[in-house]
Image (cartoon, rainbow, N blue to C red):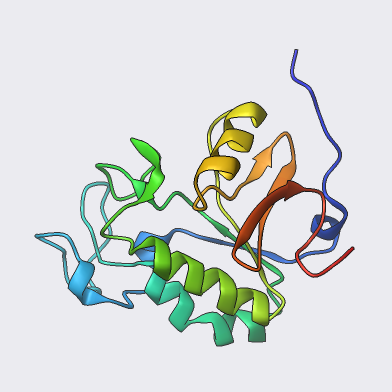
Length: 165
């Protein structure tokens, strides 16, 4: 039986914007994998166009202008494919997506704008809690409808948006 938890209060009224980092914007061509196609190429299941965390960070003003309150990122962890749903290591940012420091910068800049950053982790609650304790890249929304939020460079499991009580 699947256990259900109530949605976090902050999520009920938030405007979510889902981002597939590899297709959003190429903010750092230096981390493009070999064979990256030109940005205006038609996307395929196999090609890489170079979108990354730096690209999301570069477009935060636009996302804020749209009224976005939460960014829901598709996987950006180490993987073989462009979609990264075949994540092989939830503890490491895929080098083509950026670095842990770039993710921290994205999260910090987003939070300064009042935007929460969430990302999927395809595991159960205990696994997520373990990640939170052991590794700071583990933020998630959707594990039992709980949220793991970035706050002052600390990652906490809970039912609140950073900056609220």
